[in-house]
Length: 506
Image (cartoon, rainbow, N blue to C red):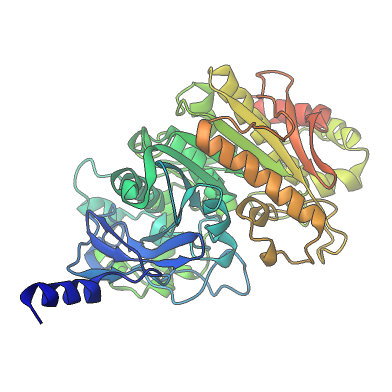
């Protein structure tokens, strides 16, 4: 064989297989997996492992490698309590070395594709970007490049302590490490996504529940400014209890740093060295609580204020915005519950409560529905209105698809049930899929991908979704018979709750 023939043979041997395409990014070469018309690259590290001395430090530079890195399987999820069948968690193992992301893209892209970056929910204590529920294939088939990611959770992601503060370099951001992780992932996307056929100048962030709350924080976060171009919030709250890092919170509540010190004292940890040497699973007990403000921190740098204060001042990112809720979010929760959600109504006057009970048609309906409205429905309407008032386009929705075969006694669309409709992963639903569900998923993916493409969810073949207005407004209701434009349901009772939430407190 000639020398030329030898080189030709070696070239063929080294060429990537058709079902294992490669991309070169700034860190090195990745080998993905192709399946039909979608290519996926998984377990891509976007920041340094937050382990050892890097525990409770801002995310460091992403690692590099020589040769080809196999990107055919998911990486570890972040440290959390055992999943217990939660469909939003994803497969084990779990590890502190979990700052990885996953990319799906169409097998063929004629031009740079829009990017959709998903931020999972789970109360900031569980979940991952690797759950089957969040497989990006169906959205990629609609021309999107889809990114899902992991970020630090619980006390490993949202925490402070006097000993950590004492050793911290001056000016270093603290507390909101999980949010810093998401910001680092968005920087990675801007820098690397073109290698996957994506358009780095067209990035939509979307998230649900705590992931939606992260989206609203990214909208007010100075370090995240300019890293995304559109935003979608699914059941992302808006008026949640938020705790200052190093000063007392509302009603004299302890700061996040004080809470960290109290927890660490109970765990027998006194110094920064103690905290960094402790096994990761120690930080899971007792679990911190999103509703109580344990994890929703105002640190002054990454999160400069409450979300509602920033929106009222017009300090949020000037990007197109979709926000909405489900019709029966927290159907199981009552205002008598002793947690941050149940305590929202505790300082209602007797007259405010009497008016609210009357607006709901009686005490039974008030007890069943008011938490959903206080936590989700009224805040979503508020943020949509405020974004419009600031001169930015926004769209409001309500998800009300409900199956009689759903085993939960929900009376509507329960919290998080819209996720498989948005991702086209209906096989993860807890009830049999019907033609109605397929049509609803198709239309929701149509609105979401049109929004990612152009900043407007509307398009041919779907009902026109009107923009939200600053005052009385309308929304898109995704119901069992299809999408319809309606006035905001039960607006009179939302008005009462708004007046309660807005009145001055002592």
